[in-house]
Length: 348
Image (cartoon, rainbow, N blue to C red; front, side, top):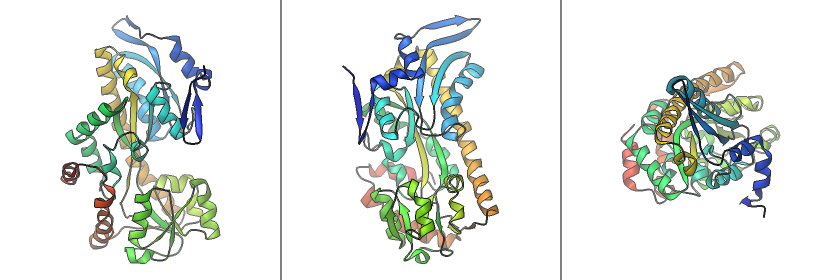
């Protein structure tokens, strides 16, 4: 019987996965094997990673670099077959596939994992993360480790170190400069269907307009919408600067790419190799985060060169944006333990 994983309107069959080279290799070694040669350990069961990032993106590098680091730093040979750009399925189907072990590793923004566990819902609150230094402290903190343990206990997944996904979203528009929230009143901003995202735009005084990303450029060009709230890398990469003019560094939402490995895939490794794999994952994530932070500034520079005006609010102006965003916490924190939010705020 052909087993099928269903995710929304899409489905991924076991037969389709077995047609890929990655899945074929995965089944070629039903039991892990270890070979030692001249001091090097070789783990003979390839891992399959299905990612939504394209090759070269920091969120791709953070997984792709693990095997290199294992070999160069820890004397372990392990093949990780990385399939970028959602070639193994949609975001949802890859999330389902890693739970069953069809793929070993995947990653996505934290909000996509809320359907499996609420333990990281606090990360998506407006102004939960206020700068890159805080993000790095949070990722390395006992709080993050404790939440990861709860997540692993509630799901068949084990979190790997997280990475940024383009840094902070900027509030872009093609109408006028917007130093304070009152300046966005009446403007229509593209949003996803996320209730929290819609509420944030409304709280700032804008008019939220849920729209598919693929329709956003034309929406800006035709006047259906006046602005967007996304990271510089996506604004530049999709030529949105051609139909935008102004941006404000509101720093409200820091995009976090949550990375996971199937629990059975991880626990099938011998203890010493598993320990080295996890250390290599930390090293790879640190590299990726440094690259992501640098890319954020690089993209801002390219956007300025393309004619974009990017405004950095004063402390007083920033406090106005932030106060409105934090005013949504009570409604959108869900079942998050208040102590988690208190500990997060203490890291600022």
